[in-house]
Length: 421
Image (cartoon, rainbow, N blue to C red; front, top):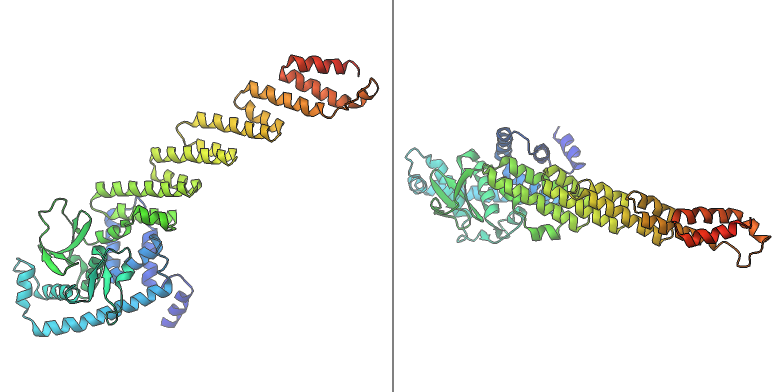
């Protein structure tokens, strides 16, 4: 069975069943998904492998294409090496340290589990910058943190190191023992009344800081998903559906609904602006419609209509105009532009059809005058009473165009010719 699974996953984009389960979970999320059920499912996945969730999410939903299947496999190998190295470190600590000192330093709760406290302290010491295994640096990828500890320093920011703390803890105990301490532009861990600053490996107290929030560990996934700047979006190709799905997930997961609702709105706006810069108005309209934000729909409808008019795709422009608040004006402008374009290219009958949609009688008469001239150019320059008869069809057309143009001079001229037929 193991061999069959290896063969099966060799031909899929997934490393194994765990990675596929993460993708199935993400794809199932919409703004209307049940929040409690979603969190419960995520909790199970995080306990199984929160690191895998972060890597797959960055590859699939944040556009980190360096995280190929082979690269993810290499990073998971590095993660196993980190776990093994930490295991040796932890075993040594357990054998040499008094557990009570860890319990007292991590909680004022006398019922605190000394083994869990010992584990947390060991994780803090193992990843402490002073020890030299980890270095804090602004980073945009969890994958950069998963180095071979025997060869390279682990480098990452607060989001990434918190995720790694959670992964290490989940190898021993339930990940829900921990919480997140959320601060403006920062995230730390929380255990049993005490904050843990993972970037320095030290205890802290952020409870009185302005904007401080205490949230469940599941929140780290939405934080990581939304940790994408506008500058990153402008330089990386991220599929619209993927980025939007990540924002939807964060919206469902977050306990701070008002904050994340704004984040979701920001994500919609950023994505739509990006798509419009790329002139991908069809995708922008799809995203705007999904957002149900009428102002975004209006902007895409208006800009899409103008863009298509400039490219002489007038039917497409009118489809976009249906979604704009100035629908009537845009439709009128599209027909006017189409008529003018057709006139300039001497497609006078097509121009007339366009101008008729907006009852532009002046332009229609001008088109008929142009048609009159076209027919007139077919006449011989040396007409006689005998030769004129062979141009009867042309003169008939000229007479019809002259009358439709309403130009009295043309009518008088062609009537003079008609008398000789």
